[in-house]
Length: 565
View 1 (cartoon, rainbow, N blue to C red):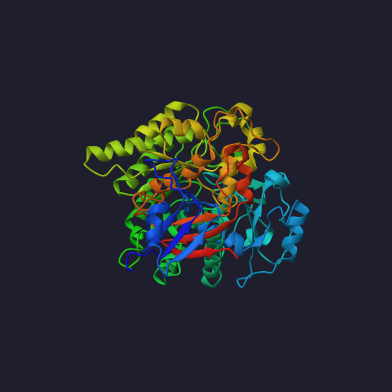
View 2 (tube, rainbow, N blue to C red):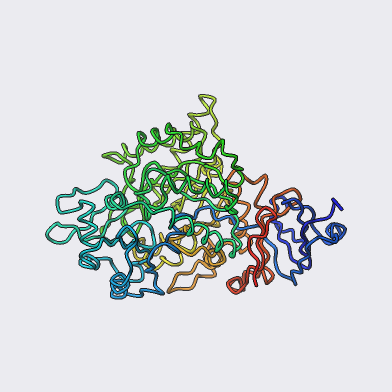
């Protein structure tokens, strides 16, 4: 009796994603004690006992639980369940945005908070919200997390006026007379976010639990939240505070956290990162938040530190080796410093501190020059650690990333530097990025096949709430490399296969988490994080069939966390 499985799935196509046999497909899987116990009909059949739950997959695929290695869990929860929505389905033009905000109820703190407008669809953001709701502070965060719009009352409460100086690593957009238009970009967002009352736990806790349920329904069992901590006001909507980090610990202690979550701490926002702030953050003890609380690190752990090296192309804040955009500038690092050389030197100091602390660095670098500088700084940090007999195997990685040549990719592979990127962002914002970057540079944007060919550990992630949490759309975007207006070319040299994309969202993501020993693949002894799909895994020629495939069942550590009706 004790050898019987708790649950078995039969008549399936089990994609084990075993790195030693990446194309191996079995027909059954058994789960016992939260682990994969056996694979294949002959091994699984004897484990079926009178109390074993038997599920007939009817030919559907079983895959490892999806690991979204760059998903802003706290911000995505608030965007989905805590704020007034401004996504295109609700507000397809600027007039509709204004109408929605005029009718939106204020929160218990008197503020109207909204999220989701996208200038790639609506057109350039101007002073559309300045005169909305003159007696009520209104702030609307965009879909990228790099811009917000505020009305005049919100600006007044934040003390942002014509005398407010420009912000290092950010933009305070202004009208012709020099007064703020209400548009704040990158580092300048912090001017307003710091003035806003914190999101109350009574709002945040149910939002987190609701999003957790939604993610499990998609087959997602693990994620990395890239940026919680004291500099949260400088990132996205500012909800990812130290209090939010503590709340995740409370949920884990209460056994309410069924997602596996890795956290990157944030000690500096989207502008002006500096070694002094990072050093103070590392000394604060925040990295030990979950220690000595009985929290299983396989469930919730602080992995490292998020650093913004530059901004995004559409804001002109990416650092490129060649000029781009209407302003025809290179952009620059958003690291503190007066010159490129000073900013690069400061980036080296920052990464040296993180590496020597034994933590992982996730470096946001969207421009090719920024990515190359970040890779050089990571290598220098590791070499410095080795010279002092310190750890240098922290698996630092580049986030988003555009690479101008194969040399950077080969350097990443040889030094164990990972790459986390977002094909769905490329698809949804591709048309405006093509205009900003030019056709040649855009065609090389997100060099997925080149990176895999060079031996880089590549993972694909949503960057939600910037894009959808639906990993199926990310896989299709990686295979097709289309944009909203143009289909992807079959001759695109950076296309990858559907199974390569799946590996990037399972085994490769587990590598980033230092967790490939227990998750990411379905082999005996590995944790039973898996999902059952209603259909077989589609061939690449029909990859769009994945979008119509239902997630029938999701297990996290053998525990059923989603079952379709």
